[in-house]
Image (cartoon, rainbow, N blue to C red; front, side, top):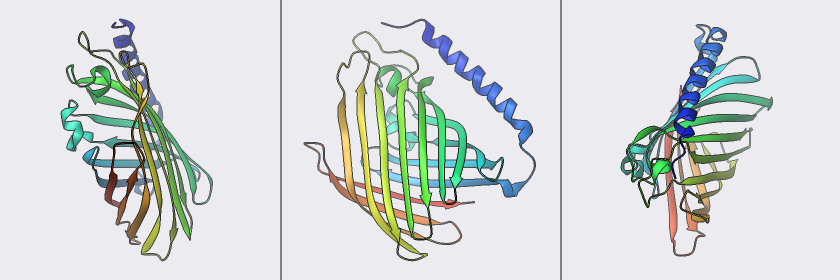
Length: 244
C-alpha cells in the first residue's frame, strides 16, 4: 500500500537541506587551508565499480562540515535506476588521530522505493550513517554504519520496497610510512520491505587487507577473503584514491 505522506516527507527533506546549507554558508570563508577533498575509485564483486568522494571544511580545530557522494551507478547500481547517493554532516575530533563523522544522505534511483521495478526517482531512500576513523603513528582503523531506508513507495502491484543495513570495521598496523596491513569485516543485510517480512544477510566478508600509501595522499588498498553467508564463496575489494 502506498502512503500519501511519503512524497510530502521528500519535499520536507529538500526544504530542510536548503535551509541547512544556507544557514551554514556564512561560516565558510575563502580559506583553502580549511578545505580538504578525497576521491576514491572502488570495486568489489557485489557493487561493482563505484567512484566515491568526500569533502570537509574546518569550522574549528576539532569540528568540520562534511559532505560526500557515491556514484553506485558505475557498477551494479546502473541497473538500480542510476543509483546515486549524496549527503552531508559534521565531523568531530575528540582526540588527536580519532574522529567521528555522523552524516545523512539521500538517494536517487529505484532500489529502495520499488525493488528496481519502478521508475528512477529522487528520494529513493534516506541514509543516516556514521563513520569513525582511527589514524595514529603505528595503527589505523575505520568503522562505518549506514541504514538505507526507502523514502517513497513506488512499487507496482506485487512489488516491494527494500531496506538495508550496511556496516564494516577494519583495523591495521602501519609497518612503515609506505605499507600497512590488517583485517577487514563487512556485512550487508536486507532488513526487509513492504512485502519482505524477514531480514536476510546478503554477504558477510572477512579477510586481510594490504595498503600502500604515500605522504602526498595517494594510496591503494586490496582486501580479500571468505564470505560467511552459506552458499557464497569469497570476496575481493580494491580501492585507490588521492587526498587534496
